[in-house]
Length: 313
Image (tube, rainbow, N blue to C red):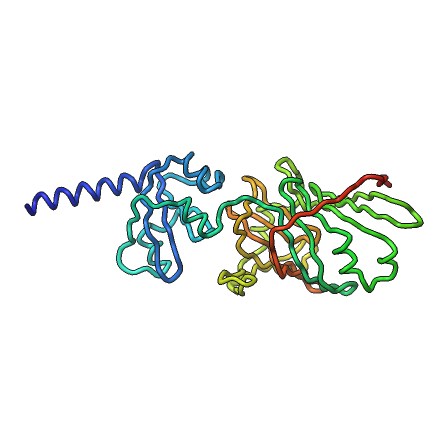
């Protein structure tokens, strides 16, 4: 009987190891202070890519790497073993093994599915010339960021001449479009290159992941992320003129940038960036004389009629 139990145990262990190593991928479900559990894999790389909505993550995974899932944050782990990873997350003993774990249910429960809905960002702005609060939209369907006239009037309420006109603005593929309507000048469209706000999959130019990694380093400082239990992390770096810049990065939840894209930034150059295949919300950009901070993110929608506007370029 003892020999039979030993054989059954060995068979179960070998089967588990076989599942765990299927396609060379291991999956760890981790939680801080609680350690990691091993999800016994039953999916091909293609299936897992579709479930996670992260083809970039799966395609970049090396053989025998570990796919780490921590709520809505996914990453590839190359250096640590499963046991070391479990201990790094505060786990004791051996990692638990989860059989027939429903990843899709877990992702839905934690609002992790990247549906990329239109987002409304509320921001505060502080510069020597202008201070106040306002908002803008990011749309993945339209590949643009929109700053409506109502938000313009809110921010520029104390500026002379602002109430005499309407101003609706867009960022589209690295260019700024201003739709101004004035009683004396009519409806005019202006266009200015910016190099940021690259939404479309074929957009070129703008910032890059290499630029970010070369110029920004984490400080270790953290702060609460809006009204959640999650946190934002601080990164400090320098701009092209050698001036200091501070970025605060938070979780992105239901937004994921397409593989190979680094940024999708809004009117005030906050929005989303992707580093090592993980999308983050860029919650603050600040320098010696300016500060733009995101104070709220929610789903939203908008409409704008460009009829009657004429280009001045």
